[in-house]
Amino acid sequence: MFLPKQIGVVAQLTINQRVDLFLRLLRLTGNALLAARQASPRCTGLRPGMSTFKRRRDRSPEFRARWDAALTLYHQNAEAEALRLAEQR
Figure (tube, rainbow, N blue to C red):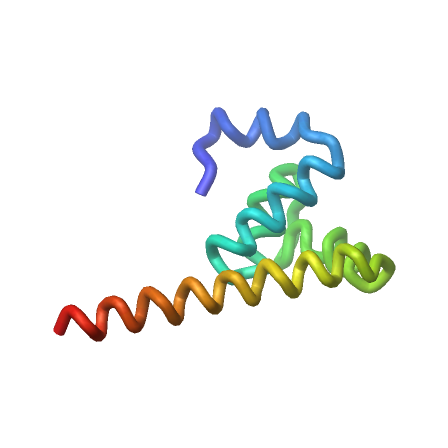
């Protein structure tokens, strides 16, 4: 999660930088809502920022592919970590 000082930095990012941040956070968390919220600090509501990224996903095959790739990488990393932890037992 971002600290309050970082929110001001994110608010100054261009949309392309926010998209890159969203995808980076999606790779790390596997959670699109959390990633959208963190990449859109000025948005409010129940699902802040989600509509921006969902609209982009619906309209851009390239962004959809990047979104899917980020989730695939998240799941691969989560599975590898689960196997690593299971082997430690």
